[in-house]
Image (cartoon, rainbow, N blue to C red; front, side, top):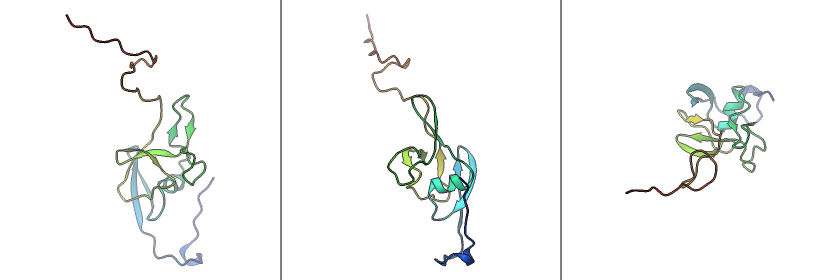
Length: 123
């Protein structure tokens, strides 16, 4: 998929001048235009994947583009599980890719075996 922009003079909607913005994606500055979603900014910058699945680390990016599938979730300004296809980018947003091994639930051992933690014995 390649992003393509219509020159402002040829756009039948007659938009005003572009207002550039910069978001920080995994520590790297990525530029976009005010009004774009985070997914739009990422796609426009040539990024097609920005999340990995919990089970096998498979890459994911935008799939449905309408907020139904949750393939495009990222962390934005410290808030996890933000759907990049729905959230409009704001200048200065800090976006972090999301995914990897499933988070360890409270009371579950860090080794991921699913066996409950043994109670701590004190004498």
